[in-house]
Length: 374
Image (cartoon, rainbow, N blue to C red; front, side, top):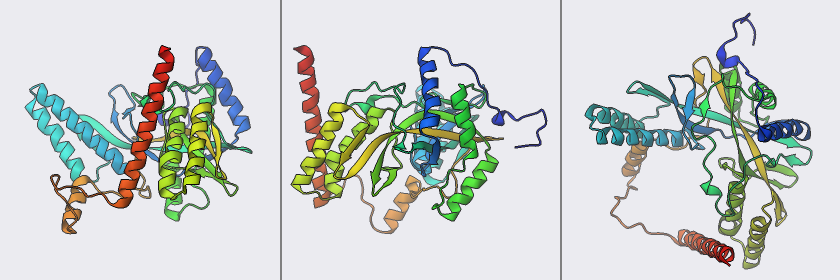
């Protein structure tokens, strides 16, 4: 960017400061090494979406949980408004209760990406996801990445965005600042992306030229026929173990179900999941497909009015809940809550697989408890 003379807007400011402590120094060293070992940055494709609240002190506080679609984030924002309405009612604030409930009901029937409620400003915020690639494939977790959960307990790790404030004035280490500089210049839409996706990405780079890095998350990548790709582009996890647990669950449950595996193949996939649990490694090959737990960088683009919202081309297949219900009723497909839900044969098959996996998981957990007591 140019033309600002000596007055650079805050959203284009990169504030670099030494990160104190031995762990921060170790992480900084690893970040430098990653630039050499995994020099190529590639966009994942699907964005991640949060609802955020503008702070009087500056910046935007993100919701703890992200969603793979804008409507998912709108739904969680509506839930937040309902909780605020309940809190106001319990405090005897009748007007506040009515105000927050009105906002929640609006989210049920309209596509709303920004609104102000009771003097507080909210927005749906988009984060772009990237991975580092080297000659040997995508970057795995780094030794300095926190990985505290036991096998099968990756879901218990708090999301790293809990309480995170998107604020370009927050300083970062030199490596993160260089990464941020690289990412804001990267459009992030590959050569094979549809025209509207590429056009939106170019527009975003122009209208939101600044950026803030979010804490890294982890996903599963797979290599098949010589190509690396995301196993599930919409899924990310707080820790490496969360991604391992997701892969193990897929190998034991969803692969047998979706691929209609033979008993022999089911056993092979289950052995792969057992190996993943035992070794807690970041690479695994099953049935000719190589999987890798992969580190994911995330960037929220920033412009003059704050963080970037959803793009027109973002995958967003669902309507607000009231619109969905109205359409189902018009098609004669709506069932009231008291009507029994009949499960078809395939759904019952999936249910049985998940029940067997839960039984296995609980047995393993109980065995670990016995070993600790003995």
